Image (tube, rainbow, N blue to C red; front, side):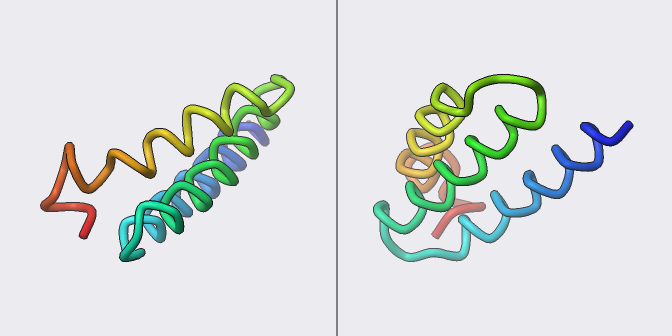
Length: 68
């Protein structure tokens, strides 16, 4: 249960990433969030950081209605 709460809290940070204006800032927030989620589920954090950074960069291209 504790992992679920952690994951939900960190997923909220992805919502903040959508408010950023540049790819670099979205990538930074995505990397941090991905790292924390990966650590919360028992990973080493590096894969989560890479996935999160990638998601942050392409967010405005894939879903422009959510990421400005």
